[in-house]
Image 1 (cartoon, rainbow, N blue to C red):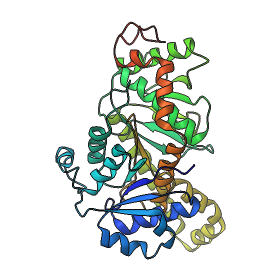
Image 2 (cartoon, rainbow, N blue to C red):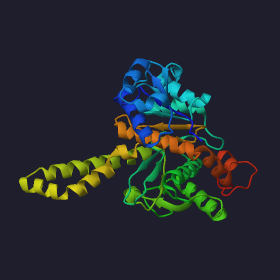
Image 3 (tube, rainbow, N blue to C red):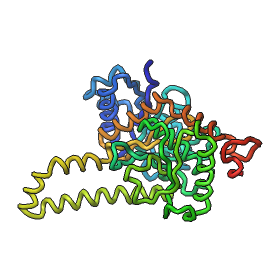
Image 4 (tube, rainbow, N blue to C red):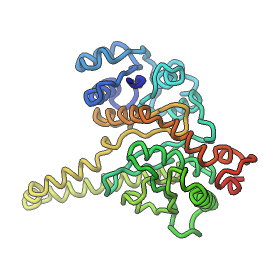
Amino acid sequence: MSLPRIAVDAMGGDEGVRVMVEGAALARRSHDKFKFLLVGDQARIEAALEDHPNMRGASEILHCDDVISGDEQPTRAIRRAKTTSMGLAVNAVKEGAAGAAVSAGNTGALMAISKIALRTMPGIDRPALAALMPTLEPHDVVMLDLGANTEADARNLLQFAVMGAAYSRIVNGFEKPVVRLLNIGTEEIKGTDALRDAAAHLTAASAKNEGGLALQFDGFVESDKINRGETHVVVTDGFSGNIALKAIEGSARFVTDLLKQAFTSSLRSKIGFLVSRPATELLRHHLDPNNHNGAVFLGLNGVVVKSHGSANAKGVAHAVTVAARLLEDKLTERIAHDLNELGAAALKENGNGTAPGSEALA
C-alpha cells in the first residue's frame, strides 16, 4: 500500500523552491513510493523539477505565490493561511489531500496555523515541538517541548512524555523508551512544583500499569546528560527546552570551530589533521544538523514536520523521510492508544475515571 502524499511548502526556508524540491527528490531516490503535493509558485517549481525527472510523475503542483515571511507574527499568518504556501500545505492535510505537511518556514506561524487547522488530539491540551538530537549511542534522543509552549504544568508534561515516547518508539524502535524530565538536579526534591508533580504522576502510572504503559519513567535528568544516550526521551517546557537546544547546538559549533582553528594553526597541526581526518569527518557527520533535521509538532490530528530554515537538500530529505515514517507507523494512532492506557480523561480534566495517576492530576 502506498503512503499518502506529502505536502511540501516549496516556498519556505532560506533557499526556497530549489532546495525544497531538491530535498524531496533526494528523499524519493531512496524511497520511490513517496508522492508529493508541491505548494508554491508554479513556474519556479516547474523550473526546479527540470533537474529532477524522478519527481515528475510523483508530484502535483498547487500554485501559490504568497509567502509567510520569517519575521511575520503568527496572528497575522493565521489570517493569511488560505492564501499562503504554508497555510495551503497544512490545509491539504486537514482536507485529506495529503497525509503530512513539511515546511521550512516561520516556526511560530507554522505552529499557529497547524493548531488552528488540525486541532489537538483528544486528551491533549497543547501540541509540543519535538526533535531528535545526537548522542554517544547509536540512537538519537527525542526532546520536547522545544519552543511551542513557554510554560507547562504537570498535566502538560505528562502528555508530552506520552507523545515523546510514542515518537521514540517509531524513530528508534524502543519498545518502552526511557523517559526523564529535564531538571536542575536528579534528586526528588529538586525543581518546580510542576516538575515534581509530573514525576509523581509518571512514577505512579508506571507502577500501576507495567504491562500497558509504553514507557519507562526514570526520574530527572540534567542538561549535561542529554546527549549521553542513557535517556531516550527528555521532557521539559518550551522555554527551557529551547534554551537547552540552542546551548547544545552552540556547543557543537564551538567544538567544530575550535578544532578547525587548532588544525590550521601550524604546519604540524595541518599534518595532524590529515592523519586524523577520518575521525574528524565522523565527528562532523555526527554533529551535522542536516542529519537530524525535522522537528515534529506532536499532539495534532495530523502530521506536520518543521525543517530548519537553513537546511540543505540533505536536511530537507531527512525531514521528508521523517514525515513519511510517522505516517507509515501511524504516529497519531500510537499516541491515542498510549493516552488511553494512561487515562486520557484524567489527563484532560478530573473526571470519574480511575486511570493510573488520575487522583494526582485532579
